[in-house]
Length: 420
Image (cartoon, rainbow, N blue to C red; front, side, top):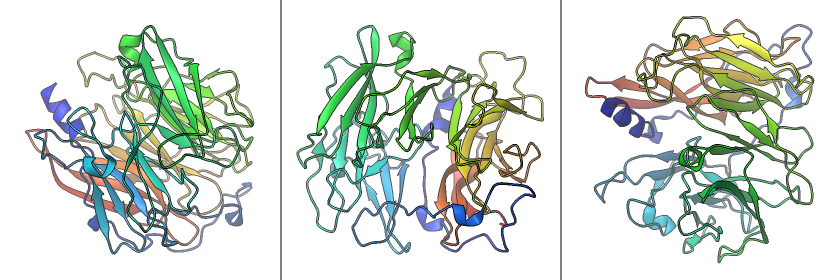
C-alpha cells in the first residue's frame, strides 16, 4: 500500500511551462454521415479571466509546496498567452498548517468564478474554503462562511455553478456530521467579507454511513437540459451509486435521481441533439489498489443519453483486467459540434500503465464503440479539456514514468488534439 499511496500523492506535479500553446489540430472536421452535429453549433468556451486583462487563464491544482514538511499543495495559474505562470500557496489563501492544504478537488481543477461581480474570476480552494480574489489589484484572501459543524468532516473543496438560475455563481460542498451527510450551498453574489446572498443546507441523498461518506465528491454541470446547473454526487475511485441533484430556478433542488453504478463521471452532448448526456465509467478496479480480488476488471462505460434516460447504452472494455472506464473526460476534439469522450484504462490505480482511448461522438446513436484514437505507452492522465483556438478542443494530458520506488520521473504535459 505504501507504493500506491506515494503514486497517488504525486499525481498533481505540474510543469506548466511545458504545455504548448499552438493548436495540435489541423485539417477540416468532417461530421459522421447522417449526424446531427454541426461545427457552428458549438461556441468556444473562454477560460476564466483571473487578472482581469480580458484574456482567459489556465488554472490547475498542483503539488510542490513542502516548506511545512508535508506537501500542502499549490494552484498554478498560467495567464493568457502563456508568458507568465504563478503558483498560489497557502499564504495566498490565508490557509495554515497541514490540515488546510491548497487543492484537493475531485477533478484537479479548483472552483473558479466571479463571486463578487467585479468582472474578474476568483479562485476558491480548501476543505474549509477560502477565496483568492481576482483582478488587477491585490486583495487580502477571505474565508468563506460555510456553516460547518465544529466536529464535522469535510474532505473536498466546494464546486461552483449557478444552481438557482439567477445568473450569479454559487458554491456547493458536502459535510459529514453526526449521522448525516449534508449538502451546503452558498448562493451568490458574495461580498468581499465572504458573505453569500443566502445559504441552503439539505440532507445529501447518499445513504452511506458517515465513516465512508467523507469520500464523496460533487461535480457541477448542466445535466438535465433546463439551463440551470445541477450537482452530481459520487465517490471517486469506488464502485458506488452516483446521484443527480437537479438545480431549480428560484432555489432548491429537485428530487434526487439514482444513476447507474460507477467510479467516474462526465457530461457532454455526444449525439448532437442538444440534450446533455452522462458518461459513467465502471472500471471494475477496486479502490484499495489490488488488495481485493476482482474477477472481471475488463470495465465498461455506461452512457445515459438525454433522449432516452431509461435505457443506458453500455460500451464494454476490450482487454481482460483492462480497467476500461477508470476515468472519463469530455472534449469536442474535432470541432464538429458533438462531444467526444476520452476513457482512461488501467488494471490498477498505481498510475504505471494507464492509457487513453478516445471515442468519437456524432454517430446516429452517439458515441462510437470503436476507438477513434489511443494515447498510451507510458502512464498518461487526461486532466481537462482546453480550447485550441480554432473551434476545437484539446486534451491537456500528463505523462511520465514511475520508478521502482513508486515516484514519478520526467513528468511532462502536452496538449493532444484530433490530429496530433
